[in-house]
Image 1: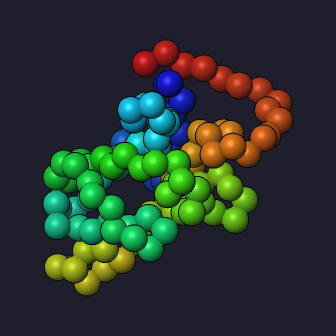
Image 2: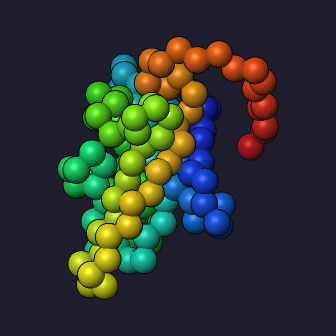
Length: 115
């Protein structure tokens, strides 16, 4: 589908990203990011998700699960990274593609950049 969004972060390279992808006959949301090590647990909406990869990870979620994890205004997905080794828990808000979860919005401008 090609619609992608990134989180607001100090370093854009390390910021989590979301994009809409096909998963069979359905549409899913792929979330990717970076973590300190592969043992860091990733939670979305309070549930641990299966992530592929090591320090660079990605997970594909059905839209029904993604809808349960959006912020109050519906434009960000809330991730929790839990590092049991370090005893830390980090919450990150990842901006989702506009309208990807069915919310109708009016855009004043749309910028499209090639990959």
